Amino acid sequence: MAEEKVLLLKATGISKTYVSGFIRKRRAASLKSVNLEIRKGEIFGLLGPNGAGKTTLLNILMGLIIPDSGEIFIKGKRVRRNFDLRMKRIMNMCSGLPNFPWCLTVYEILRFYAFLYGVDKREAQARIDYLMEKLELERVRNVRFDELSTGNKQRLSLAKSLLNNPELLLLDEPTIGLDPDISVKIRQFIKEMNREYGITIILTTHYMKEAEELCDRIAFIKDGRIIAVGTKDYFQGITEGANLEEAFIALAG
Image (cartoon, rainbow, N blue to C red; front, side, top):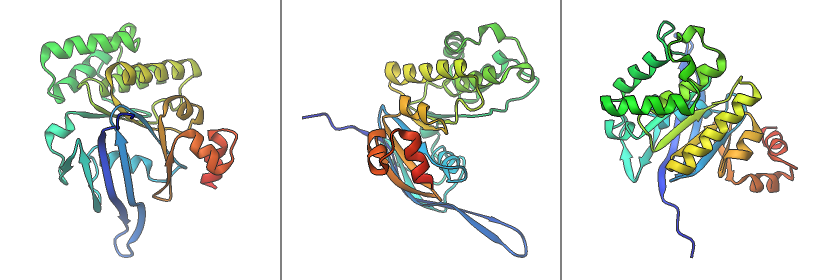
């Protein structure tokens, strides 16, 4: 009998509505009663068209945005509206098109965030050295952020997100705008972190080949609702698509 996968994260009934305007208030529902279960050690894809609610959901799971309703459980423990610090320490997030203090160098940015994450000084130095080597940042070690190429900014963002050795890593469009050769290297690194260190990963992307290559399971979100969860083969089956890209187009339409 196959070993049952352990749930690392469970979200139930997550809803979020944004309100704008002063006299005539306008309401836009970003998430509508979203349910999600993430298994320990998997790479879980979150796909959907622009404005579907993917980034809002990631920010809620990270404790950066408070949902209007719903509950989140991490490692079986219910997360309160204000995330417990112990929970935040096992998580991190990497966003596409990152933005760091323009005048700090690559090394200074990593030291600064290691301090913010409460990483021990000696451990931080070893971690920084390791990540700079693995992500090929050593040659730009003393280069300011505003002087970095797009590819190196993205590698820096990924290195930052791994400083605290997270159990759960949220990747929001990690290869957006990158040259194909750099995208390949980042995908290889993501797979390595998942395989060798067992890091559970939630990934959003608009590159269907990236989702096909990386994701064990996928959730498709549209208009704030998750409409299907399964493997890429499942999505191709329910849409009769030849590949995940055709399945995406069918579901988005």
